[in-house]
Image (cartoon, one colour):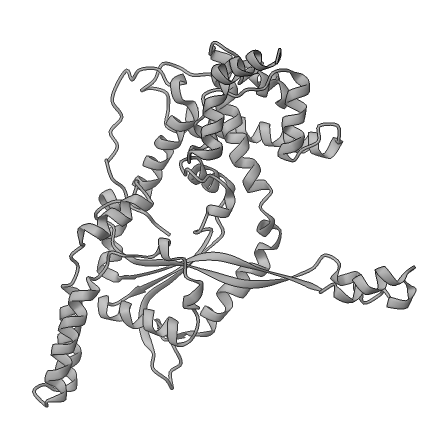
Length: 415
């Protein structure tokens, strides 16, 4: 029992925050202190995290992650917005010269000091960057991009200066624009993850995406129907919590649709009048419900109330070549040294399959232009995101404001 009291003292002193990360829906990024006792404890922490400091490649990789993390802090949090609103901040030389193990020890010091807070800030960015660097899908991104985007390109054609969705001989929809985001650069991904509670790369759902800009809101609904009918979007693979419709009040439009279509069936309006009535009605169905607003802001607090779109995330099952594939054709089964290896050889497939998420946005032309301006603009959204990430990473290192930075309270979300 002699070790019981010291163990409880350690729990009292420094473990509650870490336990909250394990069981209380807290984020490791928000910890203000670690609990690494000494160099041996630091090495064991790093080893179980996934890096062996005794392995030259691992040590080199960690050193690169640390250097990139410090460059990111300097570029985006110290230089990016300027320091005119804050008392000058500089990364201490001791932090730049410290090894990763020593950073963990510094981040565990009590009471908190300037170096302790800088060590925490550096480790926050390093941890997030590590998840980006070690995201397996990054190694297959070219193949992923091709498999996701090719089916869309096959349904698009250019007629004169008009983009058409669908074949000319079949039902087709004129588009104002078709836009593709094929990848998110590392700094953008890092910035986005630094303000997400679940800050791991697997939770980035918009690294790839497509946006349809239509003539009006009725065409936006027709595009949605087209994507389903042509199986460009496999609806069972849509992630429900990521689906947002702030473009059109669908419930009210469905009621109007039935009434207008009934008048057409009764011969009270022509086909042209039916189309125009539906277009006019859809264009006016833009009222957001309180539930929609709550859902939108719960998903992303930086999103503007002015931003409008239909958007959802779908997971696409991609197939990529196995690294063993080029060698398998040269290996004869009977040349393997024993029957166990021969049996295992038969089960090896020349490819991997996994789900990869991407985002689909549909918006009409007028709304799209509105989204590009004012509080809903992507530039304003990124600025708000940057300020939030900087506050989260640097925390108490940010000294009281000497002036007030003017930033819109709500900003838009873009593809």
